[in-house]
Length: 392
Ligand code: CAA
Image (cartoon, rainbow, N blue to C red; front, side, top):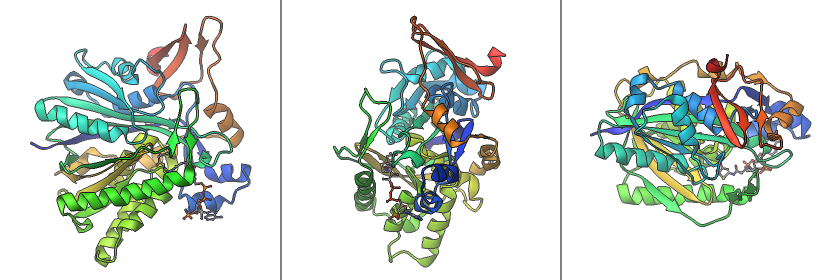
């Protein structure tokens, strides 16, 4: 039985910051960001948008009422959770109106979480072939003003419906994971922004790629010649490009090298305009590849490299299934251009705003008309979410 991704949805926040403007404000050469990091824009989320609203919006864009009756699990992968106890998946389950006898929970291992969630979904479907599992990767990446990571922030969510007989991609059952107990990027409970050993983190990313790929080759005796594309975790696309270059050895044919390079360029197009969305970044790269490379054909294999700081890495592959192109969109780049541009001062206010609670632990928010779902208030420490049309 084939198991895989039947539908993929994406949502990002309503505001966008041009990195050209950030470079000017920070007195950096704009080419350091456009060529040094390969980034153009960042999505900026206000207080009323969080991992729950973004995850619900991405999911709502793909789910039918029938899907909501068939979903048996909602797994939210995130490293920007909004509560230490209650899973964001439970809020999303409620907002979407998924049938009650479902299991909903949150999963975490930095940017690797969604890959673990997909594998758990695969295992569930393997033993319950009629089940559907909703896997959501939702994050808001905030490093702070004037930090080295500032140009690599972002906000967004991917929603993937995992089923038997999937209509987009099937898993090939060839995953190899690797765990290393390191401190390259982490966020203690008392901090709203992460601590980062930036250069060390990039070395770990590249070294776990090299060693996990070597182990994958050993176990499965496969060469890159078998793949049409490699998608990478995209903290910023330039690091993934370095990763690709490490894999493009001299033994590969010239034709394969140029195919993999061209397809890599298609896989970074969305991230270049959204920024880092942590655990969703790899799957945003996959979506970007599928929606911007019309030459891909059913049966072709795509390799994926997942990396989450701390660190867990995984190399695995998926195969495109017949008719996959009918379940994708071709207007997403234009849609990204409808986000509202913000100046640097507005970005600083919007992105780093904290809810100011009164003595009862309450705050009421406004200005969420452009959202599908919104955090509308905090009422005595309870987060209150609504579908925006219900509020009108
Ligand atoms: N024109 C063109 N290129 C220029 C330039 C200019 N004027 N000035 C500099 N550059 C180039 C540099 O040569 C460099 O390119 P190479 O890497 O090819 O040498 C690139 O721009 C970046 O410049 P720096 O090396 O000076 O680095 P930086 O100050 O921009 O910081 C970073 C880079 C440390 C990674 C920083 O962005 C950061 O801390 N990011 C957050 C951590 C991160 O993303 N780590 C990735 C691995 S961890 C992970 O993957 C998990 C996750 O999602 C966080």
